[in-house]
Image: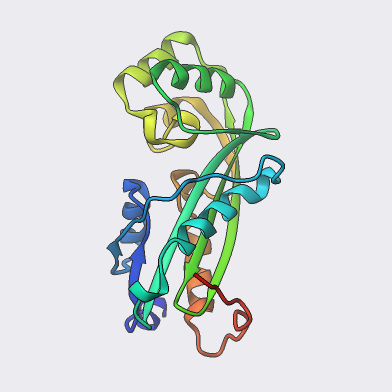
Length: 209
């Protein structure tokens, strides 16, 4: 069982996101939160489907090996929202949040979360994608959500677990928790593989910091 396998590790969630903290806690994994500020930049011509994983790797690489123990296991993540080939970031202010939600209104968009697992000598990254379908939102509905909730720290200017998720989302294809910010089922399976002594699939994945 994963919890037994992780008993010898010091788990670090390198994210200030309260949603990721909540989801990892609900997996019954003991961890600490430790973050390092990084510039979340990526090449302009980078494929949309690879951006979230790329950013999670940047966050993982920000931790110097000298500050890690042999048993430290860092988990980093990044979530993006994309409409077609256009990435929709976090809103800069309430007006921008309204503009983003108007763009998502009545359309399908993609939520992609990239995750990186890192120890002092190994690294493994993966990403999970979920398709989200929004109904057509009225201006009053958008105004209500933006004024009553706080979408400023959320990619795509919304939280699926909040009011707007209950009234606006017609359906999703894929992981609900991925839209919250952490694909828990996939993370659980990847952690089992990563810490298993029998799994040598990551032996060639070295990281230099």
